Length: 320
Image 1 (cartoon, rainbow, N blue to C red):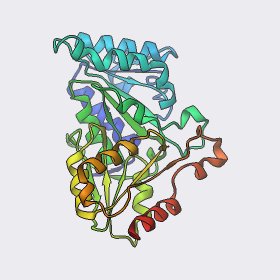
Image 2: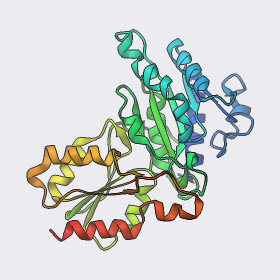
Image 3: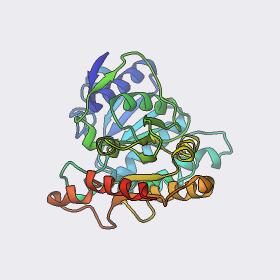
Image 4: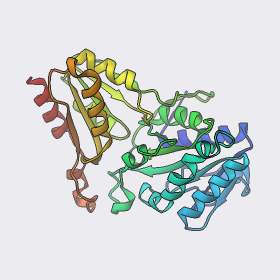
């Protein structure tokens, strides 16, 4: 198997699915001739033509609206929004139309589109380029939210998303685009949406993470008997895996780079408290970004959760 980074794995998944299914169409700002701002779609317009890899005007609401129409018509559009902070311009299209099309039509229509967008901090870019507001989108019924944590999961999850009959928001952690390399099979494989994985086994504390925070968590838990859960799909949550782990360990720490208030960690903590209260031996702790806008580049390392804060949370829950 080839050693690929996440950019290469996503490009390979898109190319494979476009070759397999001629309904798959890519669209977005600079996705064609330039191959996208991070070169994730590089070479695909040359291979599949400008009718299937479309450069669009700089207008996120138009990109999303066109993609919804394509999906309702029977195509499999993959709109790219250059950064997560730009999805807000297209939020109404996602919330009021894409996610509701199946319900609104009583099942007569579906909206099989995959919205790809880079997200998250750590690349020293301005604020709207480093947003981590996934909880907003997890609050939309009818929209799946998926976050790979490495090249292998990126390809397998994207192939599954591309074949899903309903809309999927596919969040790509920018910090991981070229940081990690993993063995990625050239053959077709899918990772089930809605299914988390146990990235590291342990028995004293459960640590829940996703996206680029998984890499930081795995480096931080050396010396701890910690079980690490990589969510992979944020909506719907894999409650079975989460509850099974916490019922075993009795403790939980949730790590995410979004702000703390109303972040996804709050939903996870509330669910664990509701469903596993009698198994808990300590309060559930969250390690998050502070409740402020993403700062300028020189402060980003202080803004994002780091090893010292993660280990401090582990030490605190293990005292009980």
